Length: 109
Image 1 (spheres, rainbow, N blue to C red):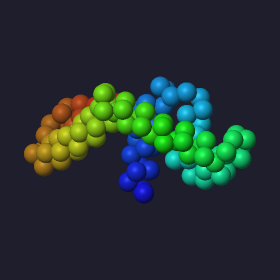
Image 2: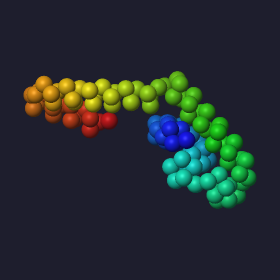
Image 3: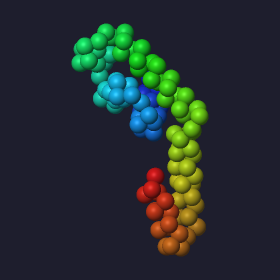
Image 4: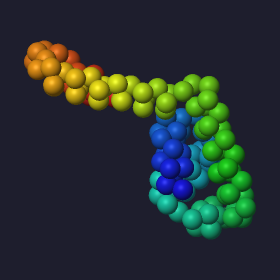
């Protein structure tokens, strides 16, 4: 469950601007704020089933965005390569200029 929560939070970080207000609210409360389906349903005066259905549909929407755009996957690939580059530069006693450029790249991420 934690893996799914982490994945949904990651996808939400990248694609939340593409969601409707309701989708955004339900996903934020459920995954980021750790509200239960019942708490969300009570807050919005809807049924628990309505919240569940909306969250499941929104999860599918986020997965579809990722399938097409791959922003989340590419971010993780870049991060892994930057870590590898950082380790390599430090072990090779790279120049101060190279390490500064790497720090600037990491700051962008």
